[in-house]
Amino acid sequence: MDKVYIEGLTIQTTIGFYQWEKEIKQKLVIDLQMGWHTAAAAENDELAKTLDYAQISQEIETFANSNPVDLIETLAERIAEYLMISHSIPWLKLKIGKPGAVFNAATVGVEIERGSRS
Image (cartoon, rainbow, N blue to C red; front, side, top):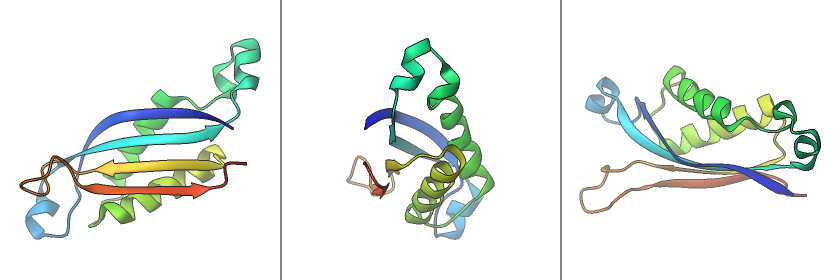
């Protein structure tokens, strides 16, 4: 299976457990790999037969801002489910980092893998 990917997508959204976090937007950095058979799109150079990473990038930001949660674990699960259903993606790996969340770490976050690569 081929992969379509988005790396280093930076979004601003409301995320966090503490009350002060619910009142501000924070930066998240997202890396996404999506399993996809790209040969059909490549055959006739058709965007409609592949995953439009520009559209998906916008959908991720819109989804995150429309569905605020406390934990990035929750956000990761919900984004993965949304993308897999709405785009019929059979497999994905999603990494969400929250830079600056821990004083002496460049970033902290979660990485999940869902679906089947076959």
